[in-house]
Structure formats: structure tokens, C-alpha cells
Amino acid sequence: MTERNGSDEFESGDRRGFLGLSLLGLAGGSLAALPMSSAEAVEESSKGRLQALYPAGAPAAAAGYSPGIRAEGRRLVMVSGQGPEDLRANMETQMRQTFERIGLVLEAGGASFKDVVMIRSYFVHLLRDLPIYRKVRQDFLVDPYPASTAVGVTELAIPGLEIEFEAIAIV
Image (cartoon, rainbow, N blue to C red):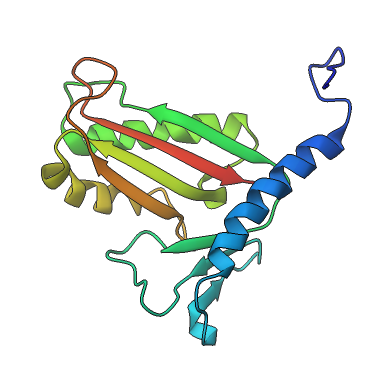
């Protein structure tokens, strides 16, 4: 049972650490199983907290993401799906607004785009919008780039919404 104190924080920081490390261990365990035969399979970031994984046979299909990320940290920040402020704006503007909203949530969680380890993007018009997304994401995401998944869908929860992005950061 978990109790909360008056400041709305867990009384035992060990539980959060355990959960974060457990989730990280699960991800790390599955990534560690990938064949890593050379030094070029792992590219370290300047901080050493995040490592992009480029194992043989799993190349990145486009610039701006890594096939995998190994991350060290104590806190997870999970950003729910975000969309643009103005659904009538052109798609590049909608994407920038969406990334800006993700940035606000990351900041509220004590993180930034440099801490993002996974980003998922949902598109009603995948083929039309993916090239714009690939361009725009490079203005927000930093090396080592997060793991990334782009999904085409028939519709999203808000009428008129054509894109939705979510993110996971480890701080």
C-alpha cells in the first residue's frame, strides 16, 4: 500500500526508483538481447545517460530517430497524446504546435526534449504528413535521437484532429 504525505509525494522514494528501474530493466533487457558486435553498434551521448543503439541489421530508416535507446535515470515522464492548438493551420505549423505542447508537459515534469527516449506519432494521412514530420522533428529532438514509431490511423479521438504525438522521457 502506498501512502501520500501532505505534499502529494510518495513517502518512500524507493518505490518510485524501483518502478523506474524495473521498467528500465525490462526495456534494457530486451534491447540487450540485440546482437552488438562492434563499437559502432552503440553511440554514446555527451552526457552518457542516453545511448543510441544501432545494431547490425536494424538501421534507422530516416534521420531523426534511433532504432533503440538505452537510458539511465530515476524518473519517467510520460506525455499523453498531444495535438496542435489550431486544427486549421498548415500541417507543418500543426506539428510544431504539437511538439511545443509536448515541451510544456516535459518541462512540467522536469524534463526536456534531450531526455526523450521514445516518441510515437499517429497520422490520419501518414503518407502525406510523414515527410513533414521527419523534417519538423529534427528541430525539437536531439542526438541521440529517441526511438520512434509512426502509425497511420483512420481517425483520432478529437474530431478534425489529423496528428497526435506522445513521448516518454527518462530524467
